[in-house]
Image: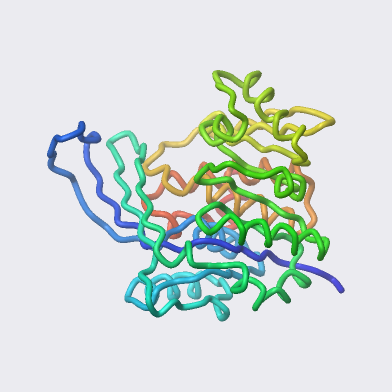
Length: 304
């Protein structure tokens, strides 16, 4: 069977975004600049990233029985993501993310998981047939860790590439780590996963090797405007990225992961995929919001 496309197993949230010149200090009230609602959630964002680049993309997750579900479902569908098997939990609310963005484009995020943390192993098993037809499986840590572990096992059993974006960072068992083809932490996530302090690329490499020793095949550390670092048992390579004017960094990591998954799904090398993903992430920070900031293939190609 000729496998193609990407299965994203993960979260969907409604992002409630406030902008202000600076973040308030504890106990302080400040005036903001604006408020907007954007469809988000790491899983949904990454699925939109894949689909807008041209990938055949399926999304599995759980949403609540509310207006936010309707808006998220519409956004995913309109961007080309197959959502026909998304589960609706009648007695829960859809996930919400409260996001503050300052005048420099930096963000602070509080996530209220809602239905995302109700996406259990039995829910995934209802749709396990997807794993036999996709080339890449991509997931994150905004759903239960047992469901993530099952996704890794099903990907391995079906010879699919398994990518884990370990966000938000959490303790991971060696059994899960040994099934990961590519893990994509940012610096702070890698510090949590490795237990090491990172101050430069050399220390990032050493921290990444902790994960290699525990069974991960490849570690890709995203380091913001400095690009990314690939570390495996054969080599360590730094991939620089283009300089852009950052407006909102909210979904840069999601854009990176979606682009990485898409390039690997069409048979490109890991070097090509990382270079492309760096450019996709760079473009995403030049627009506000999450899913609407994801670039198209033509836009990334132009930047390349």
